[in-house]
Amino acid sequence: MQKVFTKDFTLQEPIPEESIEKAVAIMRSGKLHRYNVSEGEKGEAALLEEEFAQYIGKKYCLACSSCGAALYLALKGLGVSAGDKVLCNAYTLAPVPGAIENAGARIELVEITDGYTIDLDDLERKAADSKSKWFMLSHMRGHIANMDRIMEICRKYDLTLIEDCAHTMGAKWDGIKSGSLGHVSCYSSQTYKHINSGEGGLLVTDDEELIARAIIHSGSYMLYEKHTARPEMDVFESIKMMVPNYSSRMDNLRAAILRPQIQTLDAQCERWNTLYRTFEAGLSNIDGLNCPSRDPREYYVGSSIQFSIPSASDEQISMFLSENEQRGVHIKWFGSVEPVGFTSAYHSWRYFGELPNLPETNRILATTFDIRVPLTFTTDDCTLVTEIIRDVYTQIFG
Ligand SMILES: *Cc1c(COP(=O)(O)O)cnc(C)c1O
Image 1 (cartoon, protein in one colour):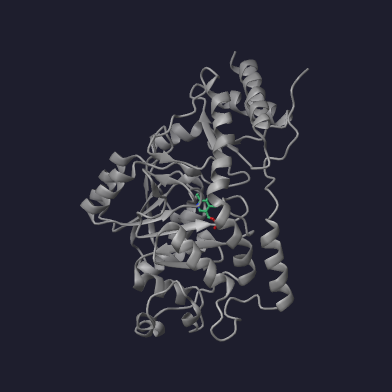
Image 2 (cartoon, protein in one colour):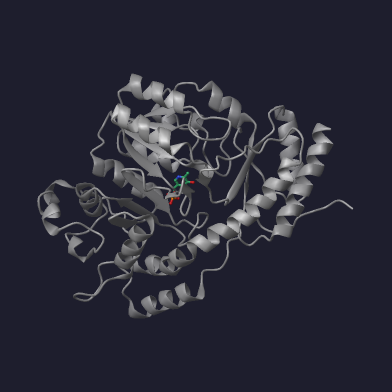
């Protein structure tokens, strides 16, 4: 009998009961807007910011409407302006180049390695040649590059590091929380990330002027006093007339949904990793399919898994995808010429004009596949999925 898989790769777990109760209480009160709080009362958004800043180990935090918005506010808050060049790894998701474009900046794409992390030699070369001052590092699909060397390169070329931690909330590099090394770091609470409020983003930093700007940019209507993960009021006073409102706040309802999820985040990350290791074990059994081994200093969160089939032709790839799909195994392919369902190929960011060709990134992504690992799966589910992939693989590649 041919094995088939029937579960949904996009099905998340329900929102915790505690979150639902809080959300209902807020809806009953009508006080959904983050600044709609009584004198001296801390709203849910402010409390979330305090708790998340503490979780990461940073002084300040701002809750935003999305991670993409947070990345944009980070760039604006740092003073990135029209024509500036921002270094960025070429393997990332559309909101990252979108934030760079939104800030009026140009993108300087950096190659990636077979382990899906940024190519540090290419980074160093481009940091030297481009004279860029900014570096947006996207830990795409949770792959963390050697952060020791990244920090060295940042110091050497005087680069300000902005981390996109959409896939590394809860992850660590050598015992240090992902996002705590960057000058500013952004996280997502969109449904498919590690905590779920539908949409949402969190920005953290120790830079008091940057956070003051980001808070005002996010649309604080001069009510920044109501923030509690913020610097002294005089930091705001000196800049308040010079910072435009880009309305990208988070509301109390989303914040209330998220607060209990911060408490359980580490335990959830462990659950992801149990599933990830089951996938990894099954996939590593397939000869000719590469699931890159990970740096022991990387404590990743396995909310998705990537692998490549270096020898695959385009025709074999399309058979591989459709055969798996027919058996209920939904696999994404990063090498597709046309963006389908999501965009992460740098070729589709044509709004930047002519972008340089990146032969290594092209070669790697042409045969790279991606599977979501939802927490609604069991380890048996993961084993079954890898068995189907192995059957399909054997059928096509012999
Ligand atoms: C999802 C994602 C983002 C942006 O998150 P949103 O909250 O949806 O804006 C940024 N970077 C990466 C790598 C992502 O996957």
